[in-house]
Length: 152
Image 1: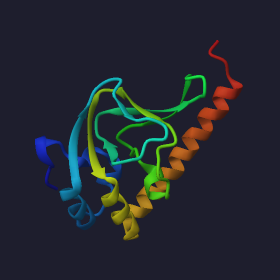
Image 2: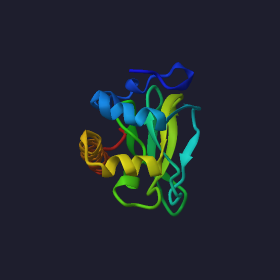
Image 3: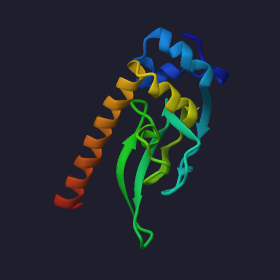
Image 4: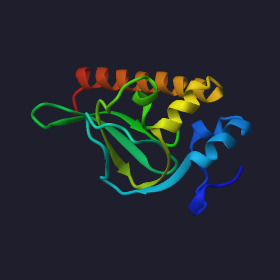
């Protein structure tokens, strides 16, 4: 499978790598490689979304922002996932802050292209829905652990 610009392969993201070759070929022209810096804020809570991100070597933290400005990590996304679930589930804005926890690379796609590919209902849709279930499980586990376990 061809690499996108800068020699970065979208196949380093497990969701994209799981796609049949025919579906991946449709997505390749819509994918753009990006470099992400440690601490870079991708989205703030309430922001509209322009892109979905498929990390390849970067790691992203999902942070819930409280009224007093405090934050709590609710999830982590690496090369096994994507940032932008709320876009294909019908949300218009990010429900949390997304920050780069470990610098690296990602492949991004315009939200309009993501929604179009998701709406086709092919394997891509199934993979994104299964990832959403896994992310919900991770967030639930994090909430339970934060409630029941102390740092000590």
